[in-house]
Length: 554
Image 1 (cartoon, one colour):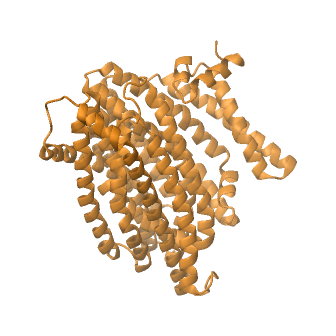
Image 2: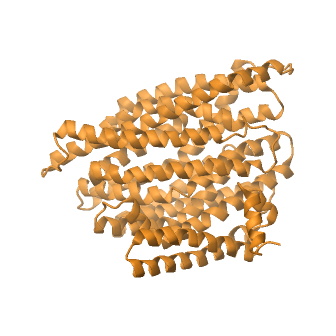
Image 3: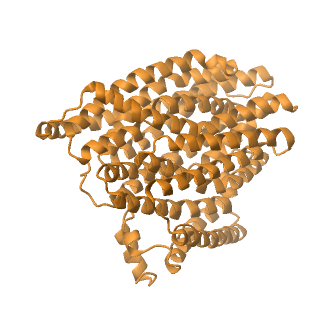
């Protein structure tokens, strides 16, 4: 486990480790989406994504926020070397998730048929056991994150996605063959529904298999560290030992706001799913099969790609939370402000160029990842991805600031802000679907509005809570200008190579690193990042050495 006495900017490096794992995991997730889509089809993707949206909200309510909440309360105890109390919190948290996760799993299994069709409900029931397993996994991840060590969580995420990918595609193929006798697409609608449901159920099994694989890994890691953990407990000379009753009250008091905040924050996706798949067929003459297919393209392709850059913001939030909590626990507001400034700037240095790059190279990225789309589906996925690009910046900053507020002890503020944003976006989504012909673009507009409102409200709340000001020029203006120029160069390189070679893959492979180099050079040329900030990045000393060698840093 990481030493708690590491560098004060060490959370940036830990965020880099977690972000790298998150991006690798999401890329693996994208890579298996194409064969998954080829096996289960648009309708199967629609069933899967609809069930997944409801599974997600139950997961959010029961277990998803556990790593962040547990890392916060344990980090506070580790900050004052109360190792015995830290471990008692860990044990109580396990008991908490066993009860809550068990109840949530049963609720999901038996309540699935109340909110959706039987085909979708069968997929949702398959997700139910995963809720229970994820809670235990979340406690173990949070325990190691509290020690400012993200390596364990990072490896478990990658293992989770590998197992998910293998089982998702394999189980979908086997179940479709078992139910239909072949992989051929039936001509009748009833046959198509049966085939799609079987494939979606197989894909849902993959999610559970991935979480189980990650849990087994984390249990092994805990076993390897068990002797060190108990040695620290034996050496703990603190006389104040928290009772289990008090710990349960503390966990409930901290976890509940985390859960509510995360649930409301992510409820946007579930609301959008319901509004589009339930409201649209009621007000316009569109078949349920068409709706599910189009929703599968939006949520299973465009939105999945747009979520990749958010891995860094999520990692930064997870790595920064224990640091801010420890600073505030020690009464060091200056330290907390330094961490906040650096985490916000670092997140924007990554998120802004990702959003611009996603807009500039939307078509080749979509074509590479979903090659079996067909032209019409590819055109739709490309346009949706371009429209979603702005929300990447808003979501990144709002995700980070939600965790910052919780680290500052403002546990209820993210809940209030998310509730306001949700009400605004829901009203806009319903209005646009009812009174315009925007179709899926109405959901894109509502989604972007939601993330923008959350971004503004959270940023304002953080500023008021700790009295800090962000460097607007270095954080937003310079990266924005550099990213726009980068996007133009990357697009020009792609189009030039496509014209010369006819290979979109070669154009994409060359244009992405070309864009990264241009962005890095412009960022240094415009003085958007200092040498000290660059040093805090993973392998920052190499970046500084390179910048000095090419005379962009003095």
